[in-house]
Amino acid sequence: MNLNKVFIMGNLTRDPDFRQTPTGQSVCTLSLATNSFFTSKSGEKQKRAEFHTVVLWGRQAEIANQFLRKGASALVEGRLQTRAWTDKEGHPRKTTEIVGERLQLGPRSDRGGFPQDSSSQDTGDNFTPDAPASDEAVPEVSIDEEIKSEDIPF
Image 1 (tube, rainbow, N blue to C red):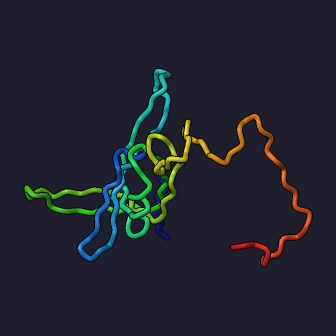
Image 2: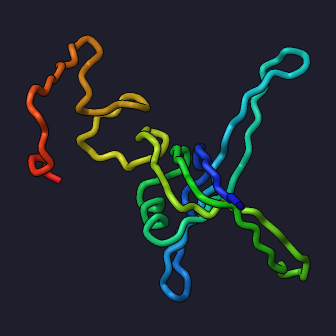
Image 3: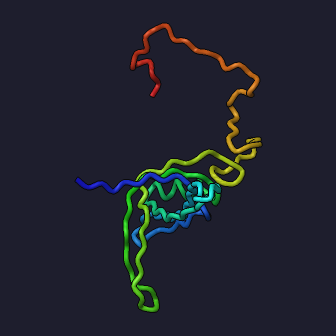
């Protein structure tokens, strides 16, 4: 049995690079940075960044181009793919990329993510307009009757 599966969550290092192939297929390239933290032998806390190229196709590419910007966080599920080519000087080149199969957008923020609309009064990274203020009590809902599938509106 073989398995080629990647899950990666990081922040975009630049705006998405969106284009279309000559046949009209949408393709979007993302550059994601991930951070890892560790303690060195001397006991110092260290941080290391890794940079990953993600290629999205079709509708996923269009969504990434529409909603993601530099600094936004994203979760990508996909597979590793290595491709080779010859550059303009005739040197052979190779790169390994993540071909995205699923994309999940991160939370909205002032630094990137979903575009802000004029009615939003976002003051922090995780502001949700419908969320109760921290001093408000969250109402508790109890359902005493059985839920039937025909009652569900979707």
